[in-house]
Image 1: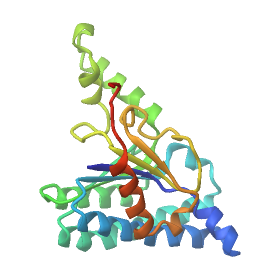
Image 2 (image 1 turned 180 degrees about the vertical axis):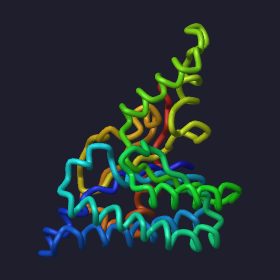
Image 3 (image 1 turned 135 degrees about the horizontal axis):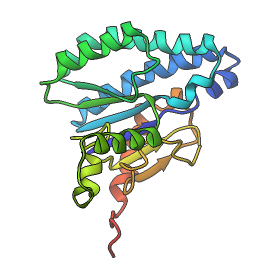
Image 4 (image 1 turned 135 degrees about the vertical axis):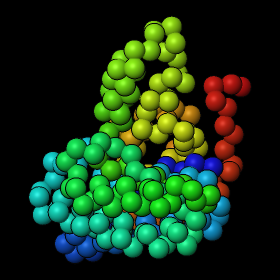
Length: 224
């Protein structure tokens, strides 16, 4: 099973608690680790998290610096955790604009965990689905693939997610009911589950509820 999550509402959570926004992001980072560990416990095949969109660069610089420092800390802490839990780590998104030390840490962790057999943890960082599709088209053109050989599988093979299964379930927190430029191609037949709870309040019990609701749905994939 492949679960994708849009982790929304860190800032709103902080505002409701009377806290500065950065504390919402910090609380959200703690929740990430809890949900990753729960996916490991449940033998989930893949978890893909929308961490930082290509549009998020519009946020104030202090907030951007905080988000990147949280990512640095996660990469450092994740090294031992991922090796211990047999997690295969990967990142999708454009590398332009990401600091060199972060890119080096990503590359190192991807290499260290590439042969792990447990949960595949994929973080979408500086990611936008429309940009991903544009990049896929450019690769197809650069590779001079004839038009009669371009089909859905060809396009999928040139996306950032090449080799990954499509998500079965999309979870979005904070009550928003839109895809926000996230995995537009890959989510074509995913089931969508939305909660009003902000991401820092998305605990294991709520995750279990999402999985139970998903198990009750009949997936038709366009059929009867």
